[in-house]
Image (cartoon, rainbow, N blue to C red; front, top):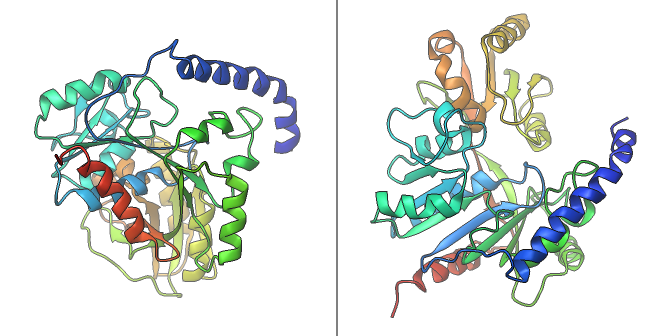
Length: 351
């Protein structure tokens, strides 16, 4: 049904794709100008509408750089209820800056987490407010060409490569495939852990990178869940009954992971960036109470956790746990990737 419906939308994709292609040409011909900064800007993005692991990659970069440089992140703050430029502080919530920036702020309170609809406006404001900043990570900014980052990182899922997709609304691409040529680093995410060299080379051949482009492969690695409010970690045994609550673009890897924990689980799925309301809490509690076992928990993602945190009074007595995830590089290429990132940043600060 979905495929048939999307075939109907194909003419709209042609129109939208032409608009995006024409806009890119205006930037390529310098009719529309991209601002450049003599400052290390790392852009983390993708071509599709969500689900490739941008926020965990931003977290990876923060962990890599924060001990040596004052790191800041700048994003749009999708679905926040505020406008303009803002920097997260101890009172900031997901309503103020969006769920993903809030997640970054909660996990890395020592760095600067900022939001602005227009990054070309937000970057100077960030540097004015935090002049000690040495590197800015632009989260989900690949398609926003008003700013030209010094290092563009493009993420694409192993099971949903951009080469196999089509432009919205018939497909999931929000930018044309040829835009991949702007990437300096391409990361194939959510690979299966035992990816072979032959499978790797088949993907490299399909992506057909330019001479200057480097390709890396990562898998998802999940850590032990921690309680949403007490932060106490817990090991999940096979006898545990799980109610999974998530509002993310692609829950498939999460569901696959759960099958390694337990044979059966319940699931309530919301759309990506869902803002939870009281009715949602009632549904979650209702489904949880239906599980007869005493050994049961509610499991959610970190992104969903920051949106549920405002209901502490309603949920604090429930066993609601958050599942953290990270990118892990395959083929022993973590150090190679790290060296590329550090070399880029250092190039701005060495004589």
